[in-house]
Amino acid sequence: MRKRLNGMMRHCHVHEILGIDKPEEIWEAGRRLLHATSVVLHAAYKHGQDVQRPVPEIMATALLRKSFERNFLPTLGELQLTLRFIALGATAKSALR
Image (cartoon, rainbow, N blue to C red; front, side, top):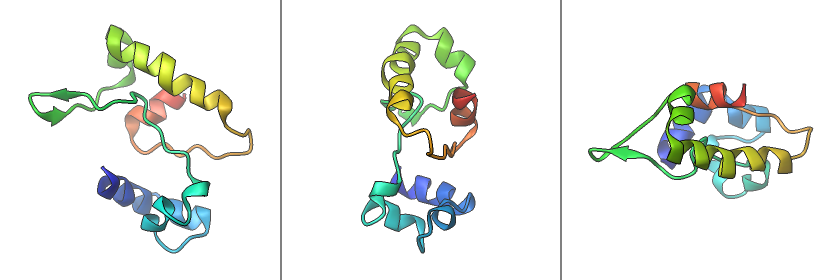
């Protein structure tokens, strides 16, 4: 998962926005610069494959909707208003909207 996130952050130039040399540094020295979370906190698998679901499908599935409402939404209210939100993927972007 971390390797995939590093690739997405590199593609979006997140490390440059944060003023560090490479995305891999975020996980150690730059960790104070990042609050990483997921729309659905726990990974969802189907037939052994990670399932990426669009937000309308998450909202239509009771278990996933509960995870979204209990785990994702409350974290947003705990963050400083001056922070930047960087959605890594279409599901995250849709959820922030």
